[in-house]
Length: 241
Image 1: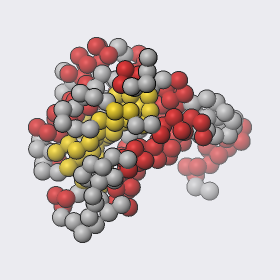
Image 2 (image 1 turned 135 degrees about the vertical axis):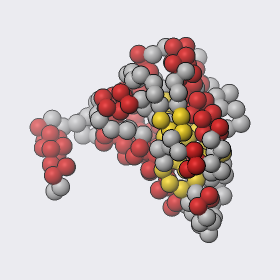
Image 3 (image 1 turned 90 degrees about the vertical axis):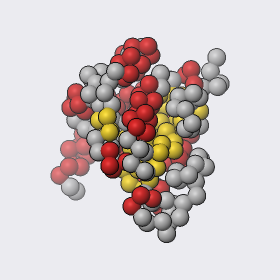
């Protein structure tokens, strides 16, 4: 057993884990909670001309699971969340996305689709001890390649926002204002210029983060073809009352 896995294994013996969504013993994400991420929540009027979709509605067990992963260090959720996003992408018939028309023969550098995670502030990344969207972006890129779509994950965006905890501590209006003046920037414009980009985020709240990221990428010459998220707040759920 690798040293990096020894401590989690020992902790699992002393304190068996429960489902991140409902607490059911011995599951990272139980089948019932996992199924909540099998939805296709369309986020209208978020990024003009680009499909924006989420795996789930941000409430109940979905909210608890994402918060456990995002703000409380439950890295074991990386795998089921990656699987959920890959399945979502597979349902989207969009060029450059898994469900679109891939051609493994297209190996020119500019034909590689970039999977770009929305950035966290430096403060948030330090508090979490990692960039939590990185493994999810890498998983989507790997799934694209497996389907014949050349792709790779690139952390092409940076944010100079002040960090804050997740959605329940921020109102939509305040978040929109904060991101609107946040200074989200493309770190290497030459990297994204002329490329297809799939933008990936954890939660769509006001849509401000997606819009700011897409605007920065477009200004740098990228072609944003889709935006994917783990969850969207209930206002985007057509079944919500």
